Image (cartoon, rainbow, N blue to C red; front, side):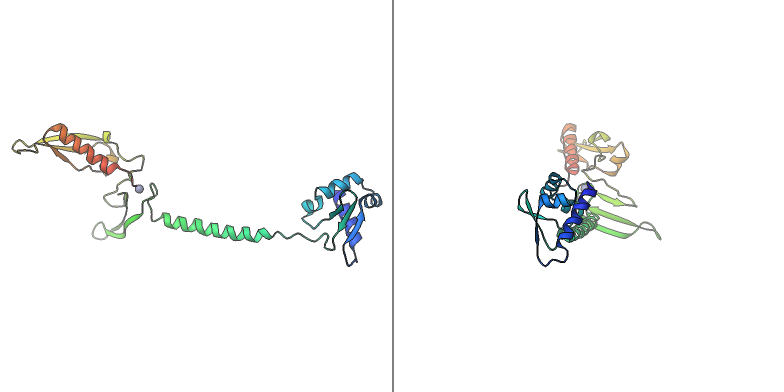
Length: 220
Ligand SMILES: [Zn+2]
């Protein structure tokens, strides 16, 4: 098919060579003179074969099936005007991705909460400094003490990762019981639950669970 297409293109080019205006030719004559099947030429023109195959200006029907017009610019390379635009769009997209990446550094990678504080010169000891970065979701990243996971992190400790301990204050008139949550896992050690008080053990425990729910609440 490529050979036939090349043959047809050459025959058409020959027709417009040295002309000053478009040339109209009969399909059957063109086919006959060049040893091509008229049906094949018909199909080639009908399907825009030359433009599709060579990305070059082709011919048009003057009268479908019988007459074609060969434009003076026949065979000229077709310029892909959208290529420039596509390249520009790609540039813009690349830039956007880069910016997004930059912004992400200032957000919690788990839940997207904005950064609330950062310090890369925290004194850890007399001559060692560390970093601390906190986010609105209460996550804290540090190489010192105080790492705390994001509440949206699947590893955020469950209430089951704590043990309840109670303390009685016999002399207190109202708040006779305190409830403490003692971390049982390494993740639980990173998240301390404020202790709670109650008139009974049950009430103190219930309040402590409420405290847990408050701190385990995902950001937004
Ligand atoms: Zn977060």
